[in-house]
Amino acid sequence: MSYVKKVERKRLLANWNKIYIEDKYGSISNSCIRMLTMSESLPPFVNKWLTMSLTGHGQFGKYLEKIGRRDDANCQCGLSEQSVHHLKFDCPLMNEPRYRFDMARRNCISPIELIKLEVVFMNKLRSGQMN
Image (cartoon, rainbow, N blue to C red; front, side, top):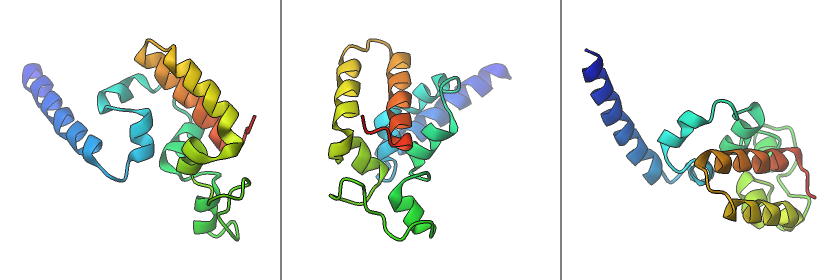
């Protein structure tokens, strides 16, 4: 029976991974966790701040405006609404942390280390550590 479970689990994960990779709504999660099988190595590093950053449901202007906790979604940089995507890829206030993250990522050889780097970077996004 355990062989059947193992084969079925592998088949289900392959189907789920295909859907995950092709999903147009999971771009932030997908940028951090390229394949679902990588998520098995996350538990020691996952925390509520990473989860908020991956889902966009956290201390971000766009979300806070959506739930009525802020009057507007504008970022402190003044260029756009403050979303995870904006902070991670476009916000000029995040240029220094983004540069340090990119340099560290280039030297990263292990998928586990890459995930740890993503966690640190996402925590900086969440906490608003602009430098």
